[in-house]
Image 1: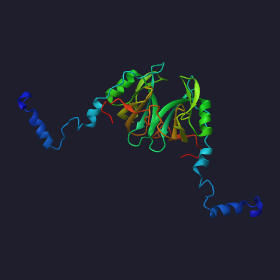
Image 2 (image 1 turned 120 degrees about the vertical axis):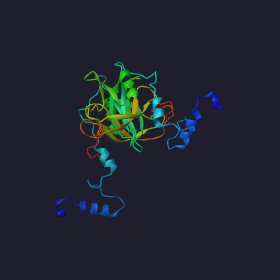
Image 3 (image 1 turned 90 degrees about the horizontal axis):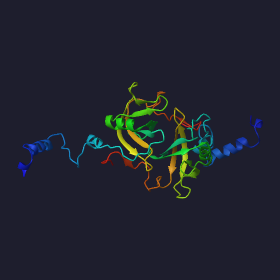
Image 4 (image 1 turned 60 degrees about the vertical axis):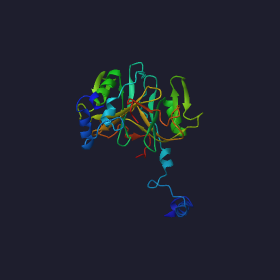
Length: 147
Length: 147
């Protein structure tokens, strides 16, 4: 049946199967392949200012790192670049996390909740996430004797 | 110096030290003791509607379960009862998570972020957190091939 496909197709796959690089297939997909299919759901609910809160979670230990706000454009930039982009409510401008500090967040996966009004973004965090130098922005508790 | 305290004080402590029940002390405090000191920070920042978002995290595996909004009164109720109370923006009323379903959240610890405008509440979740029956409200991802 080989003559029904373009010349060399099976040869290339056979060659790859024998090489150290695995053949990409639905059963054997690269994580990068899966990330390529990332799509913004069309029915996300933004608030009256056009914003949606994004919880940033460390993909390695599930620690919550920070919360910031995105608008539709910064979310698209985040999906395109696989780096987190937010909308600063106080400065009224886009900012990429780590743009100046170098403490960037590589996006691994984006979830949204049942109400479609909150995002949960799992990232690989470089350096501390908080501007104070703490790993997480949630470093203080209501419990005076807390750890 | 024993005569400066009330009679039997040291005897009781000595008795407890030898028993299977540990004596409570700053060095050897019960978790319950520490929870008793939980206090709402006076300078939390609520939004223009008097609300603050609360991220609810499973204390056992750090999974994010849901996000809901509290006002000052529901936060006080949460601290007092050690159960989560929210303010429903759509129904304009208080609701206690699990009040009807039984899927309650026992509060273990409350954190707040560097901006003091977001809460992170670690809970022991009974049953699923989401009204859909899913364990977490964040059960859908942008990735069509995601898990």
